[in-house]
Image (cartoon, rainbow over all chains, first blue to last red):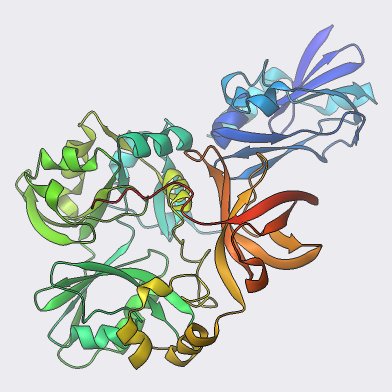
Length: 125
Length: 367
C-alpha cells in the first residue's frame, strides 16, 4: 500500500511497506525559489521526528528540512547533488531527498493527509 | 516583528503587485524580493540584457548653496572639491571613530550637490547632515521623486531609444534629460557591476516611465534578491552587512575612495583613526572568499585558519553568473593575502575556501 502524508513544515512522506521516501512539497519549493544546493544526510544516520534531516539552499537563504518521523536513512537522491534545481522542477517525484526505514509506523497517524495539507496551505493565503 | 501596516511604499507599489512581485520588508519599505521569473533568471537576464530595478526606497537629498561642498567634506572622506560639475563620486559618512554611518553617492551640480543614501539609514543620515550644515546651505529631502535603475549590457541601447545620445554619457556622470515628455535627471552608475543608469523621476511619472522601459524586449523587472546577488558578485558592499559603524573605510578596502589631498588634510569625522590606519595598516580587512564546494556560506559564517578564528563572512550566497558560491567578509590581516587557504564552518562542518580578489564577475562599466 502506498500513502502520502504531509507535515506542517511542508515535507511530504510516501510510505511503501516499512520504507518511506521524503521530500518537500511544491508549495515549499515555490516559497524557497531557485534551489542551488541540497545537503543530504549520510546513509545509516538515525533521524528523529521534527529534527534536522537535510538542508536546502536557495540563492537567497538556507532552510532546514525536518524528519517527518523517526527512522534510519537508507538512501539519498544523487540527482539533487548533480542538479539541485530538480527540487523546483519535480518536487514530488524526481526531487525526493532521502529514503528511510520507518521506526514507528504509528507516528504516521499524526501527519496530515493530502486534503488536510491542502486546507492548511489555503489558510496561509 | 514589524507591523506590515507601518511599511512605506514606493510609487511603483501597484506595478510590483501587478507584475506578481513577492513583497518583503526592506529598509522600512514593502519591496519586491523577486518576480515570478525568480532570482536566478532575473540575475542572469540582467547580465545578459537589461534589468529594471525600483530603488525608490533610497533617499534622494539635495544640498543647495555655495557652502555645500565644504559642508559635506566635513562629513565624508571623499574629495568633493575635485569633483567636476556633472560628475558623481562614491563616498561614506563617517563617525568620530572612522566607522561608516552610511555609504552614499554624491553628484556635483551647479550650486548644489545631489546625494543618494540607503533606505534604512536615510532618516538618521538626513538628521546627521542637517545638524552639521552651516547657514546658507539648505537640505532638501526629495520625497516626491522615484529612483529607477536600468542595468545590463543592453541598458544604453534601450535608453538611447527614448533619450537620443544618452549612450555617450560617461561612467559616473550625471545629466538631465526628457523621457516621454517627463524631465528627469540620471547618472551612469549602478550596483550590479554592469553598465547602466539610475533615473530620478517625479514620483507621479515613475510608473509611466517604468512601463515604457519594461515594454522594451530586452528589459525585465528585477527584484531585491537579484540586486543582492548581482552586487555580491560585483564585490560591492551592502550597508549594515559588509560595512557599518564599526568598520572603517580602510578595513573595508575602500581606501581608493579617499584622495591624496583628503588623506593629507583630513578634516572629516574619524580622520585621525583613518589616517593612522592608512599609515600603519589595519588589523583586519574585507576580502573576497571563494568556497571550494557547492555549498553557499552565508553571513555570519566563521572563518578559521588552522582551527583558529580569523574572521566572519558578512555577505555570502550563490553567484548565478559565477555559477558557484561566493562570499565576502573580514579576516585578520595575516589571513588576508590572496590565495590564503581558509576553512569555513558551515553547520559544524569544515568547508575549504580561499581568499580571492573581487569582483567575482568582471565589471563591465562604460568606458
